Length: 97
Image (tube, rainbow, N blue to C red; front, side, top):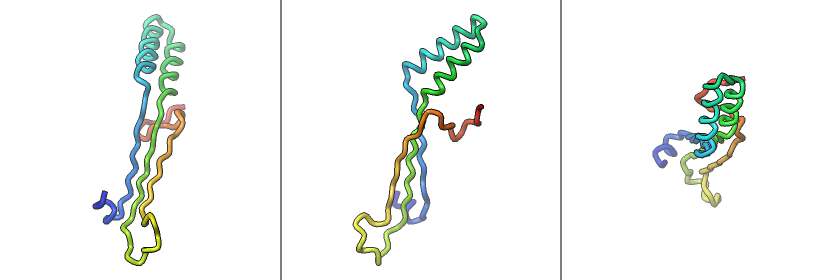
């Protein structure tokens, strides 16, 4: 992190989280529906799995401490974390509507 601070590089971490048991059962249910010819219902089951995904984003914005900035208690480093709703699209996946 110190090298990134000195280079004034900001980093964002994105983590996609899915509940394992619900995801597996939802995909199994969708596969059964599709195999039996119920394509619409299978698609709805897959949509339910997709709606269960959560994206956690952590932005780490840091800059080097300045010598004249001695009055600041926490320096000039800041970090923020924000969770987002399941409807947030994946940064690598295309938008589906």
